[in-house]
Length: 138
Image (tube, rainbow, N blue to C red; front, side, top):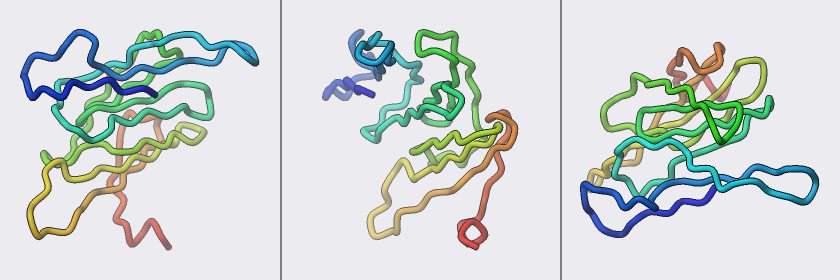
C-alpha cells in the first residue's frame, strides 16, 4: 500500500491525496494503482489495509471498514460502533468469515498510557465483538 498525504492541515484535501494499492497479475506483472476508499479523518496514523485468505482486500479509515473482491471495487462500507476517540489501526482477516481488528487512541493525552481495543468478527465483518485483552491471551 502506498499512502500519499499532504503536509498541509487544510479541511480540503488535494485531489492526489489518498491510499493506493497494486494487484499482482500473473507471476511478474502488476495492475494499478487502485485508489482505496477514504473518509475524512485527518490523522497521521496509517490507514490499514490487508488481503484476506480468500483474496478480498480490507481497508479502514477512522471507524469505517471497507471490503472488496477487487481493489477496483465495488466496495462494501461497514461503519463500526467504536469509542469516539478510537481509530482502527490494524485489520487481520483470517478465514471462514473470521476477522480481527485493533484500535488505538486517536488523540494522545500527555502523561497517559497509550490504549486501544481488540475486536473479533465471525460473520465476515458485519458485527464486531469487543475482546478483553486478558481473555485473548488465555
